[in-house]
Amino acid sequence: MPHIDVTDRARVYAEVQHFFARQIRLLDAADVEGFAATFTEDGRMHHASRDDDVRGRAAIVESLRANFAQHQGVVPRHWFDKLLIEPSGEDAVTVSYYALVTLTHADGSVTLLPTCLVDDVLVVRDGQLLTQSRSITRDDLLLVPSARRAS
Amino acid sequence: MPHIDVTDRARVYAEVQHFFARQIRLLDAADVEGFAATFTEDGRMHHASRDDDVRGRAAIVESLRANFAQHQGVVPRHWFDKLLIEPSGEDAVTVSYYALVTLTHADGSVTLLPTCLVDDVLVVRDGQLLTQSRSITRDDLLLVPSARRAS
Amino acid sequence: MPHIDVTDRARVYAEVQHFFARQIRLLDAADVEGFAATFTEDGRMHHASRDDDVRGRAAIVESLRANFAQHQGVVPRHWFDKLLIEPSGEDAVTVSYYALVTLTHADGSVTLLPTCLVDDVLVVRDGQLLTQSRSITRDDLLLVPSARRAS
Image (tube, rainbow over all chains, first blue to last red; front, side, top):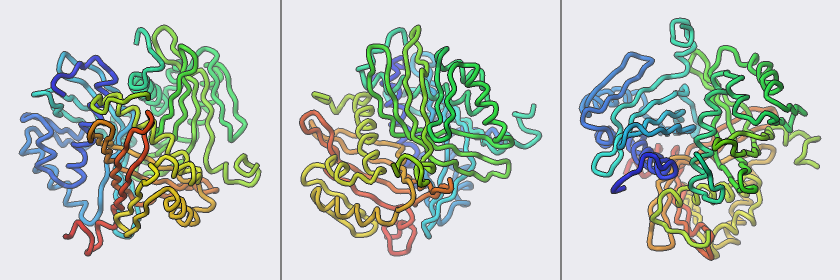
């Protein structure tokens, strides 16, 4: 991707899917450094639903390590759908999407984590997409009385 | 999308995915009027498996309201895959696809509704895609003795 | 697809998705001959995790028949995501992807088979994509002590 015309929807759709395919393989393989390197240096990861807002690759690595400790002995896979991609200036796009995580256990059983809505800002740097920010909202937390849906 | 060349598979693939991303957000947010407005004025929604065949936006709204009453206290998400898109004349496409609905509950658990095969006719009106007809077949109902697989 | 430029990511993404949509409908409908015909004559299907390695369409048909006998009375659906597509020479691509199988039962319940990582080689023959080889790794089998993750 030496250049990306962010208004070319077909091209952008394929590039964003390809970027997520590379990025999420790293996450699901627990390669936290590799995953963090798909963010910009000042990249932000924000869990809207648990007041967890980290900035910078080192902070992302630390946050993920703590999270992955919960998932020993399972293979996680992230599934995305309903990508809504819009250009944002000349070298960035916003991407909103549905996310579902499966956990496959050694006995072959599969459990599902709560579905999420994710909002990314992706930027083009040296011809490559990088995540500048990711905001994750867990659907189950929209259902508790104090959460945003009730407001 | 001022014009769409329905024979350009890359363009059509991205446009249809983008249309579904917008349309289904409205459905999953229970914005039934917004969802109905993504159909043509005479749009048809047909549940092949329960003899439910509605025509026109007002009838779609009414049908969905009854259906949504069943899903209080959960967040639904529709997941699509295996889109098979074919041009149908100059300004329409047929889209056949798999659909799965997750329901996320307040306690974080996720339940799955029966998988479906869906057949849409999408038309281009004023440069925008709209659903002219949607026919939904629930897979579980193919398995009962009187259903179509047995015929 | 009279010709396919395997370096045109948008085109290739849509073509591969379209190919999978056709191919997997045949599999999920238990049309084993139709499914086998989407492989090259010498096509290979390899279940990395159970030492099952078949070559040629007739062998694929036989292998699938044995497998489908396990799934009487359910409707299977294969869901793919995170496609990573790379050109391999002028008329071939490698495609790595996540796969999940849902089984919908007559009572409406849905069960999930263990998630898989699949690696395909797809080739262009007479303007059509065909699978030359498919290697399937079940995630649950990565978790047992003797499996590859431990090596």
